[in-house]
Length: 231
Length: 231
DNA sequence: CGGGATCCCCCGAGATACTG
DNA sequence: CAGTATCTCGGGGGATCCCG
Image 1 (cartoon, each protein chain N blue to C red):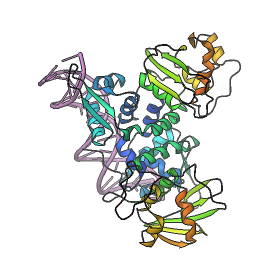
Image 2: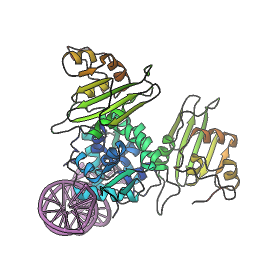
Image 3: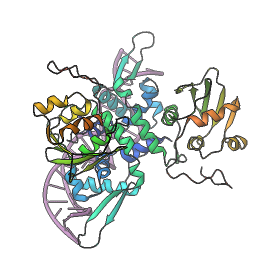
Image 4: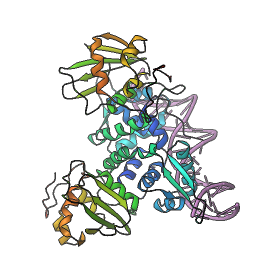
């Protein structure tokens, strides 16, 4: 049985009817990163009950947001893939993610970072107005056990899961990467004190930092030691 | 007791934790239009149980999204007003509303149009790239029993609830206004067949139509014989 | 009359076990 | 691997009641 309608001829109400169920946005976030199998989704969303995931996938399929691809063959796996209709959610989910990130400073007790959460955060933070580098640059970003890669093209930014075969620069960090995206973490100092670890062409870090921006709501008053300027 | 966390360091998860409860987005939509009293919200959201509205308002207040203003004085009314933090949701809710409107053609059985839904739909549909008129134009838009007004300034578009004292043009329509926003309703023909009723400076209709755009997902090819198909 | 609080019922979510 | 089955429990739907 589907959730009751809100009874209004309203785009936001329609969206809320399709997306408002618990875990639905998280499932879509994961599928926006890449098509996933059932168990991929389970492991990427710790805490989701299996019956709830099962129910959500059926509802999303019925709403025309998810396609279920049963692969017959060697690996009899089932892959869930977003429809174009669901992919059109990207701008809206990015806006929501930016809003939610505006007062997300550090992980709360027990909060983890997943591949999908990192890709989602970076995609949401791509600045349209960023100066693009003269030539393509590639990065690998690692936090804890998740790795994603970023491509700075001369005309676009791409974020995708997994490592990059030949990145110009490998950035290894912790949740403090959040501050780098906000512009409240001085890159050179962060490298100096080990918050950020670089491997490769360190000079490419500036282009990376300039390509993203996820501001905090109330720019925290400069920490005494680091009077960091913000944009 | 608040809803459980998703356990991830993720802006979208934070947003979902604050906004994902049933009716929350609708309450915020109404408050984005104007501060409201408890009974205003009840009447603007037919079907919401009073205990749910009460609970949502408390949660929103605790999350720093709503301020409760108890007016002592002649009218001892309580007014709920959004905080700046909640007003920052506007772009995200607009994006969601556009997405939800993309396959919202006609009202489903029993669906109504409220003041907040109309203001919200128009605000979500403001095109940033629209040509602005040489001088300010004002409109009053009426559907069924709700009336809102629109101001086309030379550098911005404003949508607000209620009538306008001296509109250049009064537009009276039905849900087919949705098709006008999508660009699939020919204004001159709609006026001719009574779908749109104008009162005032009819020549201002073009500027109005050009200022908004809420496309359908699959743009239905302009049906030459029957311009209007769905209802 | 505005602004809720209280009650009951039931569905949906959480947790876990089990199966094709 | 990809779910279904079952149970419990909290939260939403709906109606009514209460208080200043």
